[in-house]
Image 1 (cartoon, rainbow, N blue to C red):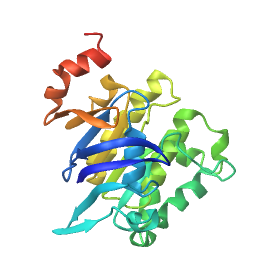
Image 2: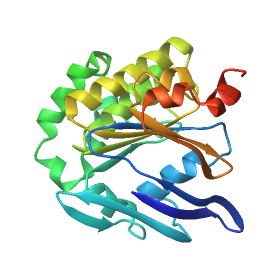
Image 3: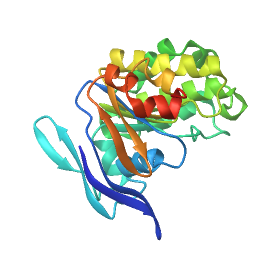
Image 4: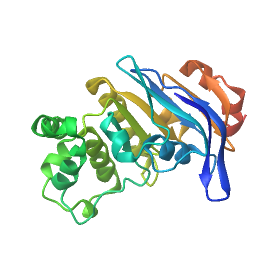
Length: 238
């Protein structure tokens, strides 16, 4: 749960009192064009950017945990994993080495073999190319690898930042579909920031529209998002 979040970079304020909530087991999408705060919010959730005001609270097994001022390593230990914008792989390491680096979380270390098998089952191309350097793979294959690396941490909450960036339309569709499959197979809660409205709506349970670092529209269902006048203006030429 995010409440009244203010954050930015130096003197540049990006988020202005933003509040959102993601409930267990649902897929929440954060919609908005470039420069409206989606990635900054994601960085706050994973501990890369420190909010100047507001709070980030995780409800875990009946306990409320304040994540607002924790480091990324501490946040990951609570079962939160991110697929960052641009994938951020280690290009000079192999596919399998990148996957194994995803098992940083203590709770995931005893499950490395099982999670690796799961990833290779979910992404057969990764098994086929497990000895290949990740930097030599296509953008779509790298996105699959970034998703697999996040799954290697045995997450409970998966943050996905702009999965469509740099991908051909057919690969965007495949990546979004795979996020939906992983959510069901792994029992995840998913928070996804995405510009591509039509693709995001394929897996969304509900969502928010961000404009100038604030929530301009909040929808309790996917249908409410589709029917929103703001969505029509931003994405559908209404």
